[in-house]
Length: 125
Image (cartoon, rainbow, N blue to C red; front, side):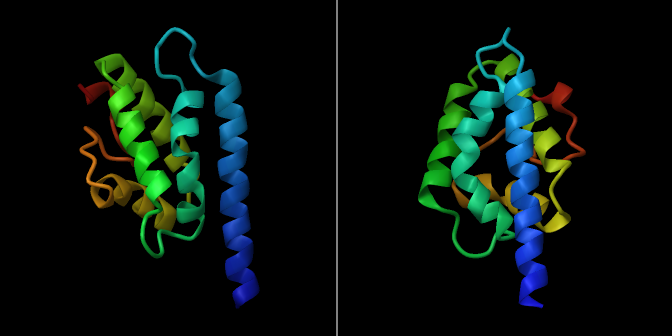
């Protein structure tokens, strides 16, 4: 049973790393916040998410969430960050999506959208 859990964590980690590489290559360059920026800020959260959100959110993950939120000053930046996060969330298993959605609240950061594959990023202001 432990091997199955370990394989799931490895699969999630592989998906996250592949998405980082893909999104870094296709990140839009016209806006101040691109997918590569979003992923850079949130890279410290990967271990927390691959663990399914068990335990406390790492401090450096909260720092990254806060920094991303502070960097996304315009509606366009927030929408771009939302699109990146939505895309990533679509590749996570449900437990990791729920863990990702809970990170801003656990870090006491007011993010103006839910991290979820169903989020309508065009409505983010």
